[in-house]
Image (cartoon, rainbow, N blue to C red; front, side, top):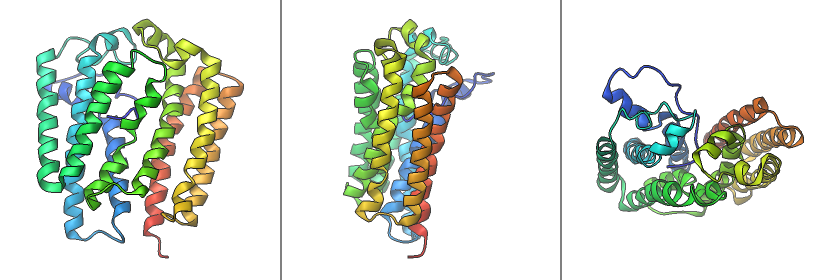
Length: 304
């Protein structure tokens, strides 16, 4: 689903087809998706969840995990040829031809069907439809249409990657509230600087694959400026939970500190590029989002 992407697991021995199928689900990416959805669920419940809420929460996480894994597998299927041309992804079972297209499609379809059925029956129809729409947004609109056509692919397609907290909120409340949309906005604005930091040091890979990523079409310097500008806007957006009354001072302090830290990385990258710095910025962006959402959760449970 999202382009909220952690690096793929390092290539290694794949002892069985089951292990190969597991790799297709991009487990590190899906882990971050489920984590953000979980935060949305916990924030949607006033106080500590009771036993019934914990049951719904667990089933919702499982359903979202299944559909997100299906989207990741479908992405590997669609980008089989592209993955084969890029060092970062050439080891994937689909790119190497170790798994057939029919096998991968069936695997993705089964996961999607199971996850959708679980969300419909055990959570609520709204969460199922929103999760399914996110699947289509990532696997079809972003992967098939936007990614090969425009350098703004990650900006527009980032909407699907920003959906997890909305899914989590809908799972527990049965509605999409303004609080979940604030969380959506934060991830939406985080996605471009996160992904463009990766694209900077993978520009040759993207050029070889024929993908119009921003560093390929507009150059390294322009991309670094965009990363800097987005981190400034992101810092402002992360103040909204406090302004809206979703969180208190502990979150605000964490958000400002983390935001200034991210801006410092972006400023250093803008002033002088190095591949090592771009890699550190990308890795920090993953840690940043996790820490920011963890701060929201901790703040939620602190005594008033």
